Image (cartoon, rainbow, N blue to C red):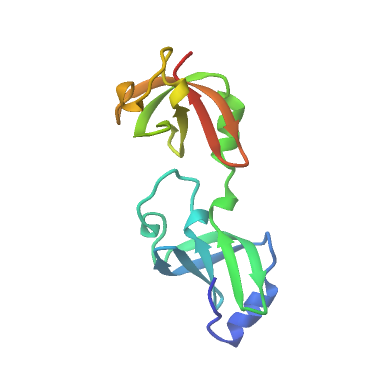
Length: 174
């Protein structure tokens, strides 16, 4: 969220409402998000609200200064002269569709990283799921690295999805 530039910006701020869709221009990029100019008022799209994509290195991978964008107003605080916006709110959450179609199915994935508690497997361009250590193999595996390595291609069962926490539980046991 940012301060307004002038009285004209304050007037724009006072007309914004939560859920409103507006066009604006990216005025600056920071590591934590992008500021969007809407008629003289500059509001923030936090990095988490830029895209549904699973990974991106920098805000500039998603938007660039001078780019015209369409945003959804998430929050308006006239007293503090701040507003927060979202780019991703314009699009359906791909996890909802993934859950509807893939829950219970065995699908291909690629191991992204192996950690003490299991392995994270990318199963969609926008997200990965966790294969907990107890779901790595028919036999008990004390060390996830003994079963999987980074970049291994695997077939995993989508055992569970928590939409609220945005977590996918996977299994190699099936």
